[in-house]
Length: 245
Image (cartoon, rainbow, N blue to C red; front, side, top):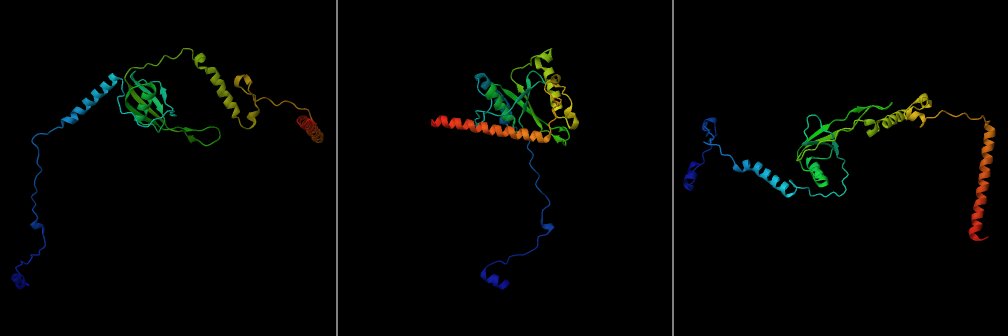
């Protein structure tokens, strides 16, 4: 084999097995910079964003990018809540649909009411277990709330002192009694109603005269027969009137 390679002018390849001894254990250390270099653009972004927001507010323009999808008849139900003790006049709390996100609420308040909001936080309250009547308990749906920061303060009006006249509390209490009366079971259905002084029932059963079964059937047959004869006569009169008979 060596002779052939020498004549052809090639060198025989050296085949060997690489061992751990052939691998250098010394690895280059990472280069540590002498001074940490900070990107000046990252530091200027918050300041630039603040300046853009202030300039858009001064011009009366939206301070954010408005969504591209147009809704002319929104069906979302957004409910304004009274603030808690921890909230300031520059904060407002809303109940929103569970499909709403922060951008949806921001667009909704700006496009419908011209209200600028900032720093929106979200809270999802799990539903409660409720039992009504004899049916099994069930869990109500969860509620999604969002708290926003306002550009201008908003103070709720004071609650009226006489809530009975303002909110009609007495009428609502009577309605609750009426609902309880309609949900009675068994022999309780025959009891007199307590809502609105018993004006809406349930009323006691009135006494009826005793009529034998065979006589009742005979009277009903005579009544139905008389009614059919009268209807037939009325139809004949109408036909003769329109046909000039």
